[in-house]
Length: 93
Image (tube, rainbow, N blue to C red):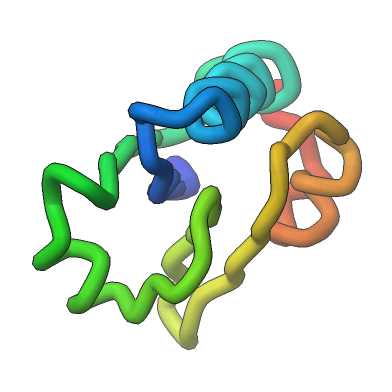
């Protein structure tokens, strides 16, 4: 089974963006035990990625699926809520 692919869109120059990144990296490391592909996109440095992904708010965590995608906004401090919202309830063994 392929690893889930997540993309985090943040403004890394802001405290909220840095905090969101720390929380998502901890979620990937501790909750998903590293069994994930994470890409972090700074929206100030890569506006073309923002436009092509239709990002309107940041921080945004995006999970691309075969039949669509799931989007989560916020500071990502609640790992259980992130997992539920992204459909990642099952923790890898």
